[in-house]
Length: 372
Image (tube, rainbow, N blue to C red):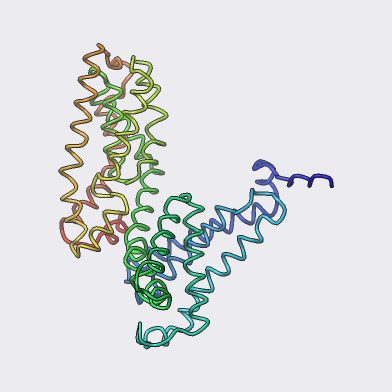
């Protein structure tokens, strides 16, 4: 029997010019814009019922995941069929709650029996969420979740029906506070960070850092630290920090004598600290505020001290290493001037101060992010 022919894969360049790919790109953009506008509207005028708000947020997220992360390579035969089927199932388990909302709110959890449809959609909900998670971040988190599910079913007294109710028919499972934090806080601050990045804030932080520390011993390494700390205030993401700072600071460090592994390590460690740099931190900070039932401003204030100590210790580590290997800084003639940097781009610091003062004055974090 002859071997099966390999699937025909269209390159991204060719795919980008096909009518289907253009329509897909427009669809993704439309969904992303609609999601952004919806969350901005909610931040300004208040959210609907928790389950409706969280479910709508999940629908937007699932749509983007299954459109942006296909199961098969783009251009392969039938590369969209499985994704559309899974997306339809994702819509079905959320819409099942929306269309039966009165039944959902009036039933007595753990007392009323689940219908066959309820059990089916509960299983579908868990499977779709696990699959969406796998596509975005890999197998580690889904396998961990599956291990906990197996433990709950096989090694505890929890019945499958109770587990289904906990995961699907309560606000302590899929539609729990973690999804609520993502809908209420994370989405707005992701938008805030994206707008700041597009406005040239990353270049401001880089020029600002170079004008202050670029000429000192090991200056490029210190530039990486200061710029990563500043960029962390608006991104809360280690990956975003590396993407903005790394292409500039790592070659600059190597050029002034830093060992390549050490240069990469400085950028990686400095960028990772962006996740704990107030006012915009990683999603875990919003979850902490929700679980502890304290204002987000209080969590940000608590995080400020360890974040500053983190960067101070890293700053001194780079300084001592530069002194040890007699590494010079960048000549002042090649560096931007501090006052010129502030005159041209200094106004981009204003949104960060608006968020900080808004939090201090007691306004909600989403409203502060929306205001800027």
